Amino acid sequence: MLQRSIPIHLTIPAIGVSTGLTQLGLLPGGVPQVPSSWYIAGWYKLGPTPGQLGSAVILGHVDSVAGPAVFDRLVDLKVGNRLTVKLADGKTATFQVIALREYLKSKFPDQTVYGPRPYAALQLVTCGGAFDSHTGHYLSSIVVYTKMVA
Image (cartoon, rainbow, N blue to C red; front, side, top):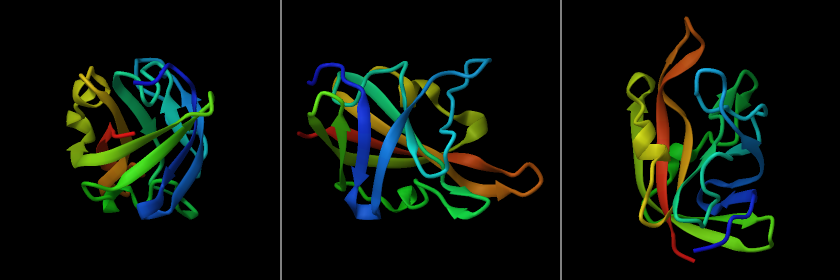
C-alpha cells in the first residue's frame, strides 16, 4: 500500500487517455461533483488516494456538446488492461482492470463504487447507456473496477 498522496495524472494506454486530475468533493445534497472540464478527469478527494487501502474514485465525462470527452472510450476497456496514476509524492501506482459494469443512474450502487475494499482499488466512472435527448443526460453510468498491481 502507498501513503496518502494527491493523484495528479492518469494514463490509460489501451484507450489513449493521458489526463491531469482535478479534485472533486460533494455537491449540496451529497452527490459527488463532476469535473468542470470535459477533457480532464477528477479524483474524488473525500475517499482514499489511489494506492491506499479502499476505493479511490476518478470521474470523467464521456462526451460534450463538441464531441468526445476524456472518458469517451472507457467502455472499451477489457479485463486485464492496465492504467497508471502518478501521485504528487512522485510515486506511480499501477492498476489492472478486474471488471466493467453499467448501472442505471436511478440504481447506482454508491456503496459498491465508493465503499471499503480489503485492497487498493480504483474505480473509474463516466456516463453511458441510453441518452435521453429530453433531459440531455445519459440514463446509466459506466464503472471500471481496478485493483493495484504495482
